[in-house]
Amino acid sequence: MAQALTVVAAVACALAFVLAPSTPRFVAVLASTLALLLALRPGREPPQPRLGVDAEGAVVAGNGESEEAAIVQYSSPAYVCLMTRGGRLALWPDSLPATEWRRLLVACRWRRQREGGGVAAAGSRTK
View 1 (cartoon, one colour):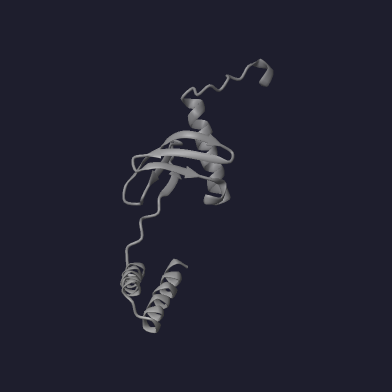
View 2 (cartoon, rainbow, N blue to C red):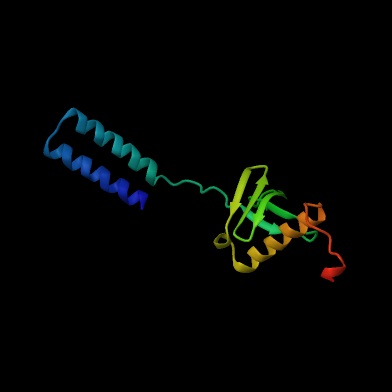
């Protein structure tokens, strides 16, 4: 969509310059042409972050080349925030397939319980 809008803007600037030449319109043609070249140049897309849960239950995040254990900063049924070496990674339920989202929530909850994150121990009334 952005590329199509850039093409339309460049054509409009060129048409305006042809109909009524002026210095500001010439500068607009140059600027829109430069923007068009930058918008249409082939580039490498940034690697998509990969997310998974390893066999020990640790949440692993990475870009495919290197993966590392991510620190769970916050988790709820509607939002998970992970801290990786590359920065903060925010996840919502619609960002993953349903089975992967449930697995991530279980891993976050299990990790929090294992690290003693304030979860009350099961007493005789809960058994």
